[in-house]
Image (cartoon, rainbow, N blue to C red):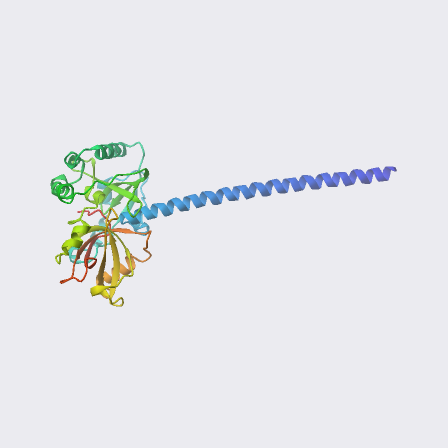
Length: 333
């Protein structure tokens, strides 16, 4: 073999080794980029899923993500500072007389507040909830609820007359702190057998500054159980808390789908439902068209409503929707 052929062979081998090294480097960088890209996509997907789950929880609570203002302060806001920071919002709100006369609730001012897992308020709230679930009767639960002097009569009616049961929580899903129209709220979400799939618990600050349970929204209290409402067919408006969604059922007094909008009201325990109607051309009808757009079998909203049966009702399932008192189960003063 000549020295020239040896040199050519060495040059060829060097070229091959260099090419292999370059290809290995390209493959290494490519695979690294690919797996980093997959990891980033997975992280973004998880973040999107968490955001969607949070939005769904808020919808069930009656809160809309687009209505929530992020907290601007670097430190946790107090109730006093929130009230002081909202002069423009307060002056722009309708007067109390206007809200009472309106057939639907006015939009709320909602802020997300910071929440620390180990802060005293949160620790006390969790301990209070544990004590509440363990209580043997409603009288033992009464000191743990907000506005106990007024709510005592409602609890007695719910447990002793309506034979209602305190909903039981499953696993804890999330917790958060909000300011809603100047009221500081601690919010806990649990898994549940309710139609929404979750049990939302709201706590508000009591007279002594400690958080107490908003029992009315927790129990889904209404003036009548759904079944009794259907049996008695009252023509006088009755307040109910219900899971609400758009529906297409037109029958009996309400066969005209062009004239009426139909919404389905489902009880908190999912055992009963009725169909409520109002005229599309009314102020309430137009509001419902917008607020319930996109609701469906797995997408409910919690409302407090005033409903009644038409005179000489032809059925026990089609009712008049007189008013939406709150677009959540909390009825803030």
